[in-house]
Length: 117
Image 1 (cartoon, rainbow, N blue to C red):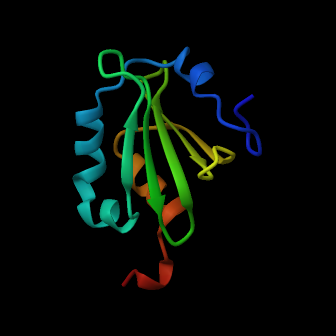
Image 2: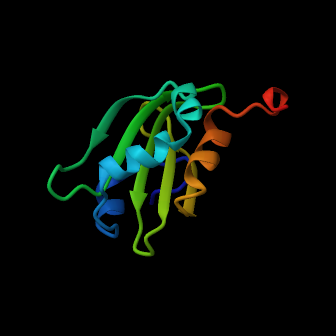
């Protein structure tokens, strides 16, 4: 369940996750605003305003077009699921620290090494 190639089961993931502060997460993602906007992120979704355990955004990047799900796991680290628009898991990134999340997501969605000087 919740492995690459299967449909994402948000309920199963959120049952083992901690509560997520979405405004802090958005602030964290926007720390490098150029990367964040290069993803073409839109259609932000949370699962429950009072007890939020999941954040989803649609992206339209160079490498990945679909959804990005972000969860806060029991170790206070982020788990990220990259899925198609229909919910099929393409990649799972686990145990990401605050200072890693933007760069790791960027490499999966948009990063092109030829653009780096």
